[in-house]
Length: 492
Image (cartoon, one colour):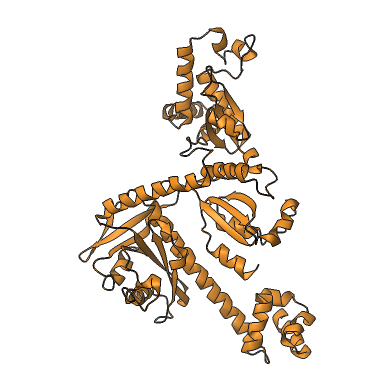
């Protein structure tokens, strides 16, 4: 992988969103979505893509990468679909992800609303109705579709000439033939919408009671069917917070309004006047070796990559996160207000967020300016519920006492902590790789600093040097005997 591409990927978060590939002339090549943007984009440069041969010619053309973070997979799916329809990238042959999900569609703008299962998102249809989903499997959506139809019979036909089979089965109330009043039919539709919006608690609790009763009566087949029905119902997700037809600009504006609202909430919770600049710090090391401290920055709630900084730990070579944090903050704080210092370091943060709890806050309390709010974030000891991640906890200092506080809208702070961890870990791993390369090449007599540098620049990694032929190595070191020695040493 080219160093330039790797540097772009290093900036991509491990979050849900949409990514875009551009060529050297700025032409859009491809739009995709991902649960983990960093992993997904990386995969394009590390896989052979034999399963998708149409994108193989695209890979060498990728020159720039952009991404848009979303709150969840549903949002990413809908945004990707909208952007592909509008921008028509060359290598997006079809919206495969649209086809892999099922949705329930209600034509709410028609006089007699219909309900159906759809597998593609048609902008015109979306404009004239409501979409619910997506469902991860056809089986799940069918189960839910059939279930709600039994609860609230509905019509699937458009302008029928006679009552359909479903009317005779009791699954369609016949609204086109006045077998049900319009008011009663619309009441059914309203109940279905409530159900699909997630207001299904009474339905779920009813099924749970049936399942327990069946199990107590040892009717295990029925209990298993009810269990599967419960699982299907829990796949339901609510309506979207933004329209399918929104442009990318409108989407970003909508998200930014949400960010501003969250910042106001944080200001209120902390009782401070400004949260414009938030800095978060994390330490990455293994037994004290190759220890780095990261500083990541958000401006008005948006990560500012150009202002990220990394600190190589100098004072300790044994594991001591408290002392390492103290060193990093001490070195960072002394630059505040100094016009000769690095531009990012010269700025005063409104909040310093530390990845840690009571101990970490106590370790840095004496170096943080009094007019900068010091906040800690740590993983809770207890799970919110089985199978879920630990709930994050926030800590502040009141005098010499650390107190846990409630942050009502913590998303920005949690994301920043995750970003600080990623950034510190990246530098830690790079340092370990460099040390490993250096030590192995240094052990080969005749390989000095210049030759070592040329080898790494030419092949990129120790593994690639191992794969190289003697002739290829000789083209770098200009010494056949030494090339043979290098090849032999690295293969042992």
